[in-house]
Length: 139
Image (tube, rainbow, N blue to C red):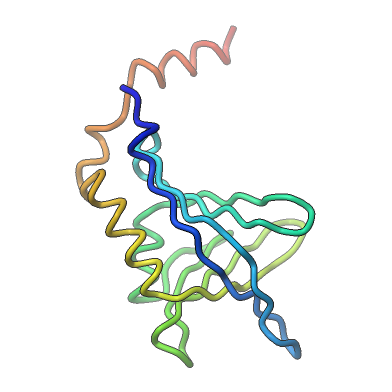
């Protein structure tokens, strides 16, 4: 199945939050691809290129309402501004807290649900293709 036309992409601007500094805008795209129906990606456009983080769509949705996640990615409502959501990213090379407009994130999720309803993700997995990928890595 060609799901390329069903991919959901939303451009937005995150604010990079750093202690003692004004928030810095970071252009980004939120991407949902039904070929990986449980995941979303956030692609940040930086001065040196692009950085992509992938995580569970449910994590992003849950994080709009309550602190969610553990480890590398945490998503939570901003305690000082109910109209914003915070995305905390931890990597061996650094740590970042980014703020986004919660309404923009919710609209992106709603668009992804128009493509694949929550609870129906398994219907979109091409198990034959995934098995072929596994077999090809063994060869």
